[in-house]
Image (cartoon, rainbow, N blue to C red; front, side):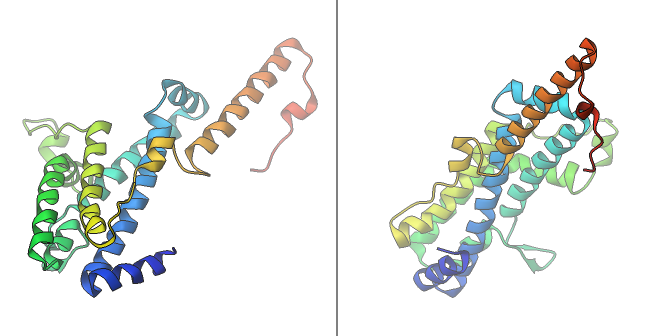
Amino acid sequence: MTADESRLRNIGAMGENVGAIYSQLWQELAWLYRIWAEYVALFGTKESRVTLLNDAAPAFTRIVQDSLWEGVILHIARLTDPPKSMGKPNLSIRTLEDAVTDPVLKAKISAAIIQVQLASEFCRDWRNRHLAHRDLDLALKRGAEPLEPASRVKVNQALSGLSDVLNVLTRHYFDSTTIFDLDVRVGGGAGGAMSLLYFIDMGMEMERTRKEHLRSGSFDPTDYRPRDL
C-alpha cells in the first residue's frame, strides 16, 4: 500500500484522530529506522568500514557520523515528547496515548509508553543540554552533571520501545505487527550506505593502482586526467 492508502485503512479501523496520528507516527518511525540502519551499516558493523571511510575522507566521515547520530537522538526525543510544548500540540507517542479512548487499549499503550520513556531518557538529556540547547556549565566542563550515557545498544532499545507502542495498535486492529528493524538486520536498505561503501572501496583500489603506476614510472596519462565532478 502507498502511504495514503495505509492512512485511509488505519483511519477506517481506528477512527479519524487515532488513525491519522498512528499513520504519521508509523511513517516517522519507519524513516527513523532507515536512517539508523544506514548509521549502523557505516559505523556499527565492521571496523574495516570505518577505516575505509577514514582513509577516503576523514573529516567528512566525522561530520556524517556525528550528524546521523545526533539526528537519530533528536528524532527519538521528539517522538517521546509530551503531548504539548509551550501550549502547542506535538506529534508523539504520548499524543497517541491521549487520543485512544478504549480503556483496555489505552492501558496497554500506557504500559508500553512507560517502558520507552525510560529507555529514551538519555535522548532527551542529550537534546535538552547538548543538541537543541548548549548547557553552559556542561560545555565549559565546570561541575555540570555528565550527559546520560549513550550507545548503539541504548538507541536500539529506545527504537524497539517505540515500535512496541505502535504494534499495540497494530495487534489490536489488524492482528499483525510491523518489523521496523528489517533494514538494520540486513545491513541497510537498497541504494544506501552499502552502495556508497562499495564505490568508495573501488575508488580507493583505483587510487592505490594509480600510485603504484607513478612509483613504477609506467603510468598512463589517463591516470591523471582532470575530471569535472
